[in-house]
Image 1 (cartoon, helix red, strand yellow):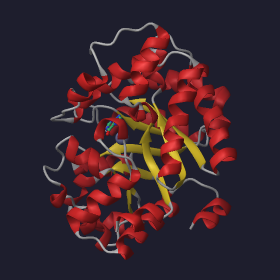
Image 2 (cartoon, helix red, strand yellow):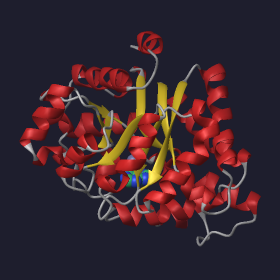
Image 3 (tube, protein in one colour):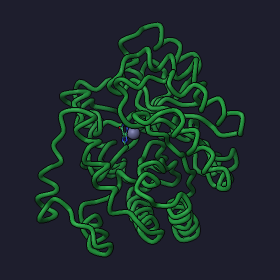
Image 4 (tube, helix red, strand yellow):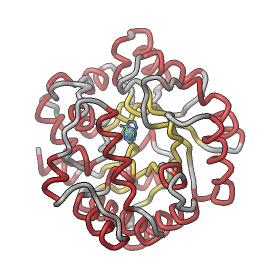
Length: 324
Ligand code: HPA
Ligand code: ZN
């Protein structure tokens, strides 16, 4: 099965580029930029990667991102991720980035997006890996900050396919961002939002009905609501599920309890993704292997998961046809 997973062409739709910052690169960039980390070694940092909730992870994730200062840093970060894509036979990916994490520290929006974009161009020519960018708003910050970020993105609009919503789900429901999502939709962006990761199924309904998203990121709590499960199936609303993230953040205690196979068998458009692979212990193949093992999946299940990701992607019809 391991070989089958390796050779299966894959599409990744839920990946935070800041969450692909491996400890080794974090230390290298800290040194390059003269930033001191509160850890003596890579090993000590890795020891700290033990989470009991989304927030316990986010605290380290935002701390780690502080080593990213210059365009070259964002290029190196993104290129390192594309090398993992190549090794994992990921042929298309949709990369999320959190501009507010950087602009709040005085790093220009241009620095962030130019570094990422140059890596995207190189990945296309060097590895034939296509990609899109998703700009996420941090939901723990206010609406005005999100609108300001949308304004800053204006000159780079051709480089950004979609906007999304991430960070702390508890206490920051979709309603808070109804107006900024309406503005983004009017400007022609596709829309996604994290919902039903730790928060209730109602957040999935509200992301669909109020934010008018094209996909739900995570969405595993949908199984608490039978009517929502039927709706997701009938509308073929995609869920970008992240199995290793869910067990690391204790959304499910054990992978054997994960509901991705149940949802797949119900005909829901579920996909497999790595979320923050440097923090959660695995890239795409590791995520596929983890669910295949724990849930005794068939090859047909795995192929269906991969086809779902092609269908759910924001790639052009031409590109979808080429990779399916
Ligand atoms: N959930 C919410 N916000 C995030 C995540 C996540 O899994 N990863 C990075 N930011
Ligand atoms: Zn995520």
